[in-house]
Length: 441
Image (cartoon, rainbow, N blue to C red; front, side):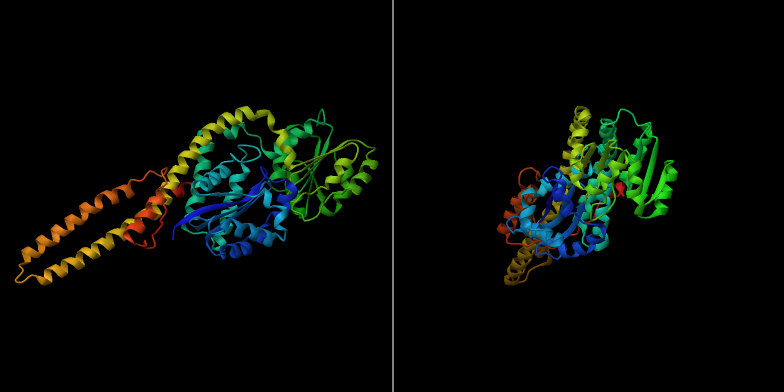
């Protein structure tokens, strides 16, 4: 049975944040879910990539996944895992298989599919989610190979193009957006709710823009103290966020939470205490930290992670010029990977054909020799050499054609035809990874 690579999911390109936040997986949910995913009939290996901007299942599956209904099975798996009616997200889903699946993963890891092209966070997120699959035991030789090639491709893109230099991170875009509301930051106070990577990046950008002071609120106060010390800010106990909120002009949320941390009634109270001075909220979290209803209040500006797409439009032309070069690298690497992937089918098919024909040759040779009387050893050697030579000449063209396939010409159909013509089933093949895959680990 042949294999294929299948990706089923949704992203900021196809689904709003309200859908993505409901379908996303927390880290604690990943490994149990991966075990159930890998248990689906037809799924051999599986990983889940779940970030603010995408939820995707990456799987090694049986060949001709659509015919087997595997994209539908994975879609139903997502609905069951997240306890979300299938109809509420089905229209946002996409499925990529074969070369398109490989190309999609390489583009994701290289940040070519990101909301902000060239942003650095996605590669680390993809690595972390592959590691979860490895720990869960749901990745095998194929996913190992394709993910590690994706990491190597991302490294090439960042090294050989200027895409990273031209890009703006989501956090910096958020701060730039705040700058469109306030003429200056030097008399403003910012509050960061959550102290993960996104908050730290936001803090750096705020400091570079000259913000007067920064308050850091996290569930772990020791963490808030450590981050505040790094940025010369003020740590705030998480349970006192509402009390300190009236001091904040800019509020950036990136905390993990299942409910809104800042609600509309709370902001109404805060505005009264601030005498209606403007407040700017940027919600970087998925699920969201801030109730969307606060955007309806006067003197309040709320932007969520989807709104940042507008804020990063300024450098699109420069990034896209670099992205063209990056896409060429991706295409080259897709071809390289696909040649390896198809060889998993070519090599064992050739072996099976040779073994079957050789067995026929030996069997027929023994029959012929058994009918000869007084055969000399020299005659046996001559007949063995003659029949072996005939077999090799007959097999030369079909074997050579299989060996020197062009991966753009639908070779898997050729392999399937060869198996049918010779009536063989290829043995299981080893899929050892070459040394080049180790360069990105």
